[in-house]
Length: 277
Image (cartoon, rainbow, N blue to C red):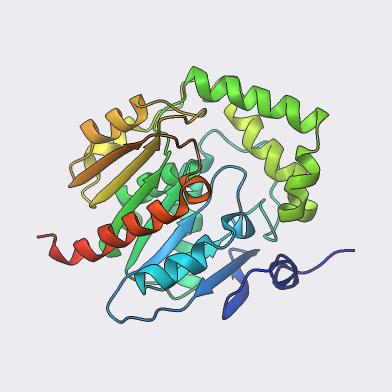
């Protein structure tokens, strides 16, 4: 049985005053937004990982809105969750497309102006690329969780392991609870491009010097998809006020593994943005 994106969101148990779909460049984009309880704060926009979607944030968006008082907006990129599917294979420059074309369209359709981007993994890379130019004028800050700025051997090795697990375990069934009919598109779109020969030399370090948006960078010590070299490259490359933290006993997904700590840390960062000169 097929459901439209709004029904999918409801079936997954997401609590939001506004859920549904946006029409963006002939595509349907599922979203959930959680209202602000304070005035004057930028909208927090969540950019999910390479296998993520709205529902895979679980209750984190709702809790983040309650913690900060800011409106929180989450959406599923094309090919994920209840959004429109995409054609495969994804191009090597897919994150640039998401950052420079899709994200601005989504924010415009959702009537979001001043914002704070919180990007996880691929979403963090997309946030960095968007900060170069596309959203620079009204972006208040960036929070990057396990972001990538270049491809690493550890990333490739563990995506290869995930690909084997997708074919031989219950991984597909678990992901299908979130992605529905998009499950194969979501997984193959992610793994296919990261494992392609053309992506082995993927690197966005050259864009970092043009980023002036204040940012908080968080990396787990136990992240199996990236090393601390990612943090070092971002810290050494950007022309922005930057705070970097490496968290022990934390892997690739701080919002799932240590949510209370992350909620508090984003709140501190957000409140401090008003003090940035």
